[in-house]
Length: 385
Image (tube, rainbow, N blue to C red; front, side, top):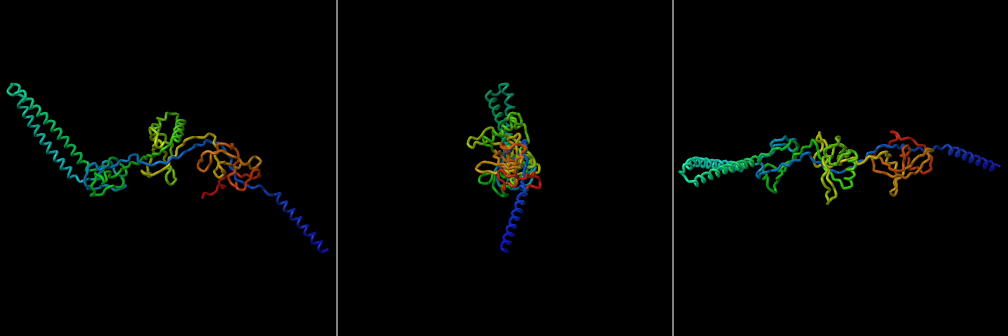
């Protein structure tokens, strides 16, 4: 009897437990997933090109005459003014040449004075036939030769003085000067010693040279023609500032730039064409020799749909997203993607405006599941690593 009572008690408890578990299963809520609602918008498409930065003017400072470097009169890496003295080369050999040319000029002037005197004496005598015509012709020829000799001596003196002036090297422009390539005492102006002593750069505006392959050039040129409705040759006159410059640390230069010029031809050996852009640089942050990326708008997609990249899964080149329909049932949808725009994919096909795409909780989803969609807000944003 006691055993029968124990069995009945056990069965009653088991039935009660099952009934409680069934009631608990019936009240289980569908899982929550974070969704975004798609919307159509105008999406500009950008492309980036690696370029190198140059100064608006990068003027090399050469040693135009040979000699020993005598003095350096600037601070390396500083701003120098146009006309400021930078270097001096030992002037003594050139001063000697100037003195020698001055002596030759004085000699030529003396010969000219003598020829002038002889001509003035012979010409009246020739009029009265006191001297022959040949003597007069000789005096005229000697006078003209003396005049030419004076002009030649003056030209040689000017050349000697110009060479002497080259011993004082001055800044041709206002700009930032670099590290000197020669020291005081070096013999400059002849290989292997440096002929180019330094470089001055004007960097209020900087230039960026980058190359496009043929397909990139066509895409960019067509985008320009579509946007401006102008002939491509007008690009230089337009000066449209719609380019961005991305620096090596990933930051964006605060000043937009434009295209300075497009080269006349595509290099057949590389299949690329040179494009030069300009960017204001009022704070002198950018320096020649840096590398940066030029970002240009190459297209605009009308009625484009952008969704977060984490909402898209890819398998063997097929891109899919989970979509929650009006009945809160999950569907797996294949989509065709375009380029990425920052942290989002541009979806070209497979989605319509107003649909709910799952962005969080994807791992636990299966097609046909019923879920509770929660609209994405600032609080549902995942923290950046």
